[in-house]
Image (cartoon, rainbow, N blue to C red; front, side):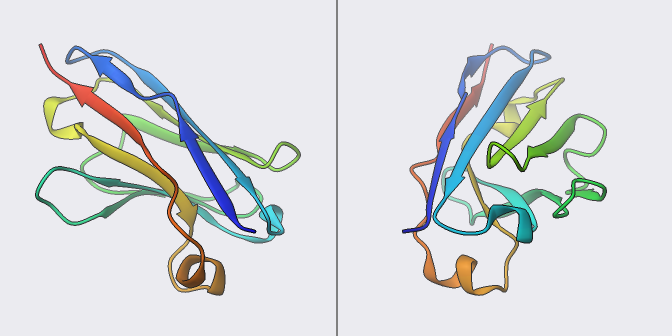
Length: 120
């Protein structure tokens, strides 16, 4: 079955960095664009960053552009999110999944996510 397992979150101070990891399984990973999402308390889940199947193209939400970097390793079926210059407004639970709109996105369960808290 399709599964996403996120890790790497934690409590950091503003300006610090974190690297999130996501292990995917149960589907042909290299055939799908992958996306990091986040959901802050009381807010809807939002798209943070997307990476193409080969990793050659990436897109970011305006709020994280220039600070976050998404990458992938197709051999390991892993997706990463390097987060630098973290701000309190980055506090959220972070999830990975395929790009919206495909069958995997619509039918597979969300992972447990990884909590990122940015606070002084």
